[in-house]
Image (cartoon, rainbow, N blue to C red; front, side, top):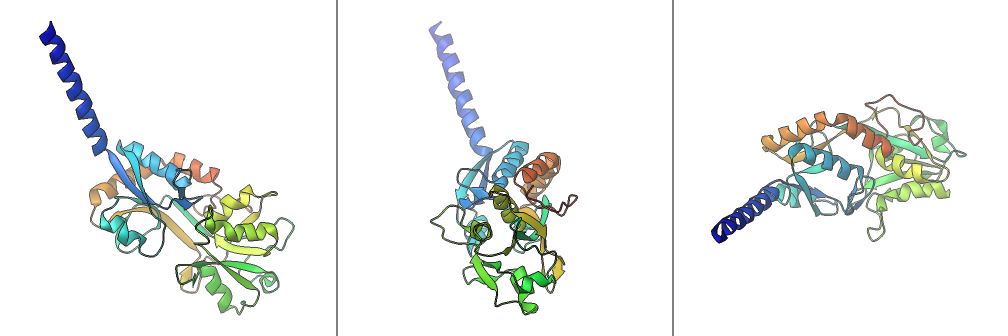
Length: 274
């Protein structure tokens, strides 16, 4: 009898050990920004966090995050240094990595108050009179596509820049441009669609958004397909994520709608924040 119980105990220990090893083998290592809503944060509240969770479920894996602020060198120090195996929310066909199939397409948008000036295109005369805000990208404050488009039109004196990095000690620093519209500091912001759609919808009353036209103005497009990325050459994981994204398309679309992401791959609406 004692021998039988001992054998059973050994089997249970081995079973739990095997399960632990298997669970460890099913980790999906992800690198993301811990303070960058609506995309991601370290409480996994961003829409990219939710989409990663769907992909992990399809792969039979558990997402395990390495958090790193998305600054210059982010991919070099994370994905390409083998710190993680997957990064969500990157432009499709980005050089130096293997990007997946796109799971949404968005654009820069005008964001304004319901009672304020409203622009319909980059050539709208209101842009020469209203107080404008544009996003500055990178450690060196490089201009975003809308900023370049305004400069080509000679619209500079009434433009204020808001860095996408902002004050990283505060929550959600890229939202500063949307807050500036809501407070009346500026009349119209020209911002990346998912950011403007999400934070604009939280304002009272909600801010209105419209896609910046034309979508191609000079060398820099206003619209981008967005993918996830794995290391270049990692076709096994890349193809698996491609299939996962395809299988969970309906759920991904629902998540993007919940976060008020302006979409160019779905029927457009005049105000994507509603």
